[in-house]
Amino acid sequence: MKKRNLLIEVIFLTMLVLMGSVVSTQAVAASTTQAPKRQIPTLFFHGFGGTVHSMDYLIDQAQRDGYATRTLTIVVNPKGKVKTYGTWKKSAKNPEMQVLFVNNHESDYHHTAKWIDSILKLLHQKYGVTRFNAVAHSWGNNAIMYYLENYSQKKNQPQIDSLVNIAAPMQVLNRDIYRRNDWRYSNQLNKDFRSYTRPDSTMQNLHVRELNIMGQLSPEDHFDKAVPVSSARSLRRVFKGPHQTYQARLFTGPRAEHSALTRRNPKVLHDIEHFWWVRD
Image 1 (cartoon, one colour):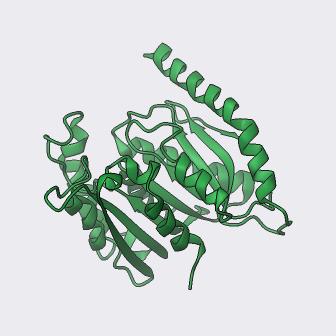
Image 2: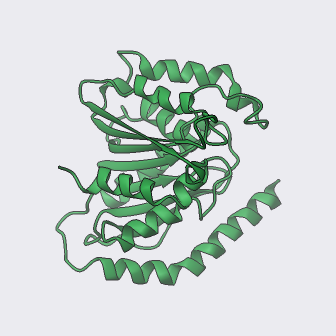
């Protein structure tokens, strides 16, 4: 198992090296003016089995469109140790950060939430981050939600500003859809979700803007091939606090398939860009 994890990490780091020259060149091109203070970073969290490619389309296209700058790549090893690659200049416009979990098949999102806590501690200590945006896909949603409920109230903890949930499996999933891993249809999943909806929950008291993106293959198929629409839609029960806004988008057709929502759907990209960076 140790050899396998080491091999996975080596593959991750090799791909990062190959990406390095392109990333650094694009970041310089996108940053033409100096800013006295770093802007709020946006962190991208992949889902179960996610790779370096899971969020590439959203990150790189936002940069090409002139909205943001790819900066750091954050890698978390199976023991939770955090390493950063790349640079984050103060002049970076709407900095984007890709988060990669070497153990990308960790289904216990309680562990992943603890790793997110380590990431944000590092960003706070090293770069002075006090607020952040996040976009999560699939199982990554459960990690960020659990993090927000159980870690965000800690002293000196960076606070969420805006959140995008994509294909969020918030409720127990049908075994015919997810056949691997009991966490995907465990009582813990329901227990955690109920804790988010309590009026006295940490979640309900956060100051946050939320965009919920869901996929539906066809009018007959009420799911995106992995997550039922009803499971993702249940997020509307969470973001009802006095300092919160909730928006939802339902996409249909082949490009609304579970993985396609983040990898090749320009309409999803458009809505995310406008939600974050084109405010009325």
